[in-house]
Length: 147
Image: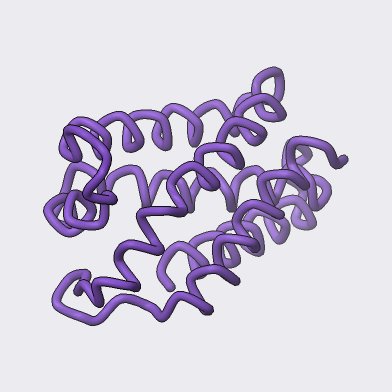
């Protein structure tokens, strides 16, 4: 749920800053870029911090080197978060992050099916996780193709 909160709070705060005079954030499209960047910053950092072991456990067993995959996806999320904040690269970054989110979805399925815990709490049920992933992909596609 923290990624959704980061997306919504970041977008709202950026939009408010735009309304208060920050011209670079004047509009929903740039505000959504900031919210999405904040969300991917949060999830990217998790790949290297306290949740790393949980994320490694989520990788489907058929895939090799779960530790390397978690590192790679974390680096891509962090790089994408930065690129979202640069107008010249934001659309490409958003499209790439939408694809990355879809590519990582099997890990969410694995976590839900195996009833793993994240940070000591049971994972979000698959239906809710699927809905959240659709929101994240939709937000990324809105940045890639909107505004």
